[in-house]
Length: 182
Image (cartoon, rainbow, N blue to C red; front, top):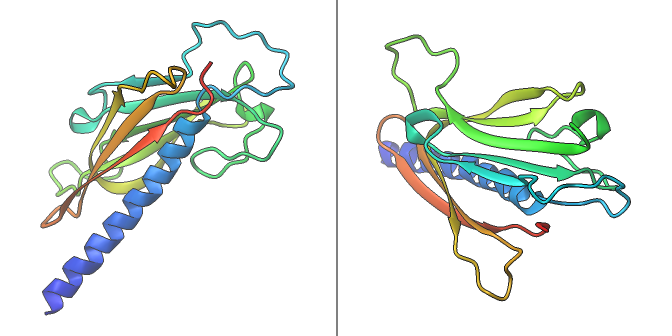
């Protein structure tokens, strides 16, 4: 009975962590390509508002990079910093997500998956990496076919595989849509 209770609690904890990751990744995807109505910047069509890099991370995980302008409201990056002109480069905020090997683990030690890393810009506009959570075995991001009615929107299926390093391996997925692409 105690073993089942521990397994249940681990499953709940991993699911809660995955939901947090989905919320942050989904918010970034929805913000991709946002243009402030008061912006005077002229953006070229070739600006890459959202990019998926296949098999670029830990154990062949995908990574995601999103750019958007700063809104007039209070917006936050993936680690909770308030977005401002200082936290942008050429007027664009940037957020990225990737899975990397867990930091601080000695070689040969048992590893419970990788770490989900958030990339954002610091106050000097430099890219900074921050660990959001551990226990991520795999991150997959696929662009899906979009209905002809909404050609400007893109759909992305995000799949996370979470692990406790022993018994549990949870596969979870969500689908997100962009809102602001030109």
